[in-house]
Image 1 (cartoon, one colour):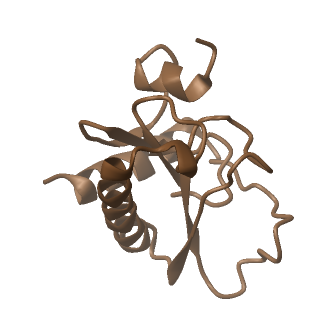
Image 2: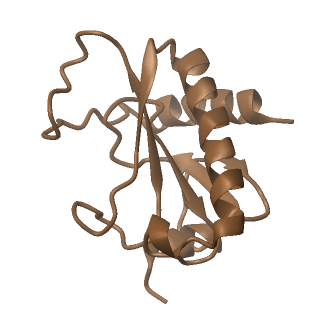
Length: 137
C-alpha cells in the first residue's frame, strides 16, 4: 500500500511521533502551519471520517481533545484549530485530524495559510519530545 500515513503507522517512514495508542497514532505535521501542528490518524486505513467505524469515533476524538490541550500547554498557544478534510483538500487519502496551535494575530485567515516549517530538526524534536511528555499516561 502506498499510503504515506499507513507507512508511518508501520514505521516505514520516519515521523516525529508524539503519541501512540492501540487504534491511533499522532505525529507532527512535516509541513506545519506552526510548530506543534499535530496530525492524529487511525492505525487502520480509513479514507474519511465517514469510513471510521462508529466504535472508534469517540475514542479518536477524546484523543484529539487531549492532544489539543497538550499543544496549547507545550507551545504556549492561546487556542487550537481542529479540523478534518474529507476528500476535498485532503492531501493524503487517510483520515487525519489536524490540531493546529493558534494565537491572536498569527496571520491565519480563511483557508489560504502559509506554512511555517521547523527551522531545524532539533526544533521539531524538541516540540515532539515535549508533546510526548505531555501526553504520557
